[in-house]
Image 1 (cartoon, rainbow, N blue to C red):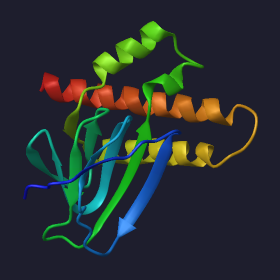
Image 2 (image 1 turned 135 degrees about the vertical axis):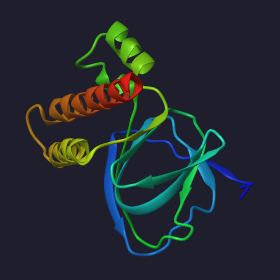
Image 3 (image 1 turned 30 degrees about the horizontal axis):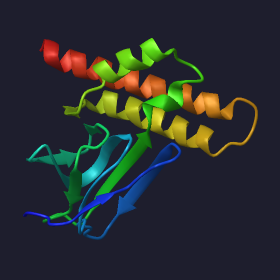
Image 4 (image 1 turned 90 degrees about the vertical axis):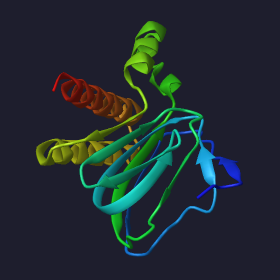
Length: 167
């Protein structure tokens, strides 16, 4: 399916969302962000299109999408899916990382699909839940706690990605 329209979806702040859908949901336009997007499939089936490839995402699959990569997802033949998604800019880490560290992180975090084990999926889910919990808090250092949890998530993704390359 070729989509004719492309939409830009900017994010000014860190965005985290869990969606559990019992209905088909096919995006009507492809889109891109000025952020990284990390998509964690928790259940059902979802078809993710980016880099001119269709990926079938099921429980335990992570999609890492870099800023300005055009992508979209569809239900196609599946009516149920459960997912967590987070969008963030690397410059959000400026309060806790040096510019060199941020640059190194951007070099390590590449666009990819990673298939996790059940144990890795549960760990990733816990990291997303921690980010969501801290993002809903107001108070002393809550913003930095969100950043540290996202860093833990990124480092775990890099670790899982490197382990997959070694096999």
